[in-house]
Image (tube, rainbow, N blue to C red; front, side, top):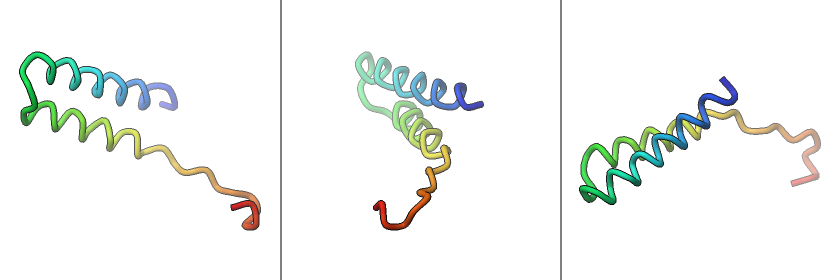
Length: 54
């Protein structure tokens, strides 16, 4: 899971770029890019141990 999600996001983003170069921007490329953004946002944020280290 830790490896599959980032790889899926990267694959979707690369596929979106490839399709966009061939056919131009369309609904499919926008959906692929939005899906990649959603997948990359699924990772939990790291918790900081000490508040003063911000």
